[in-house]
Image 1 (cartoon, one colour):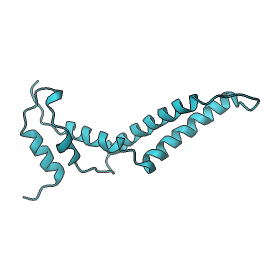
Image 2: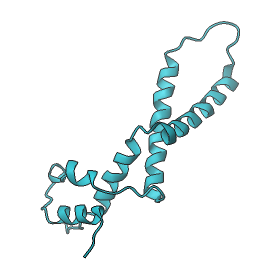
Image 3: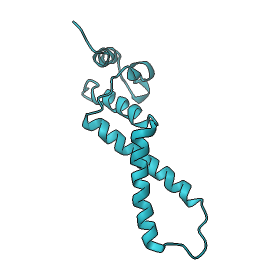
Image 4: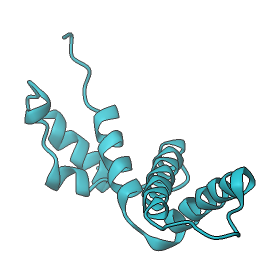
Amino acid sequence: MNMSISETALLQARNQPVHAARDIPTPGIIKKIEIDKSSKLYQAAQDFEGLFVKQMLNSMRKTVEKGGMMDGGMGEEIFSDMLYDEYGKSMTKNAGFGLADSLYQQLYFLENLPKTGV
């Protein structure tokens, strides 16, 4: 029987008793899960990473002092928010932070754990 790395990792995890979150095997098994970049789960993980990057950029932007006659007011705030939203999406797709990959692997693993009667 020829199994993918993901299936093998899940079978290994299923053979280990899980009593609490601290007992869930993580590093070795989860890193073996193959990432399906066309799945809805991965798209959600990428969206989350994009929001995270946007929040990081917004925090950085707030440290820059505004002053002078060229403050754009509310219009600038709205435009800047949309611009940083696009920056976050673009950086997620191009920069390769890896948060979406790790999040996908963790959620995929947890989603496929055997269900218990707890």
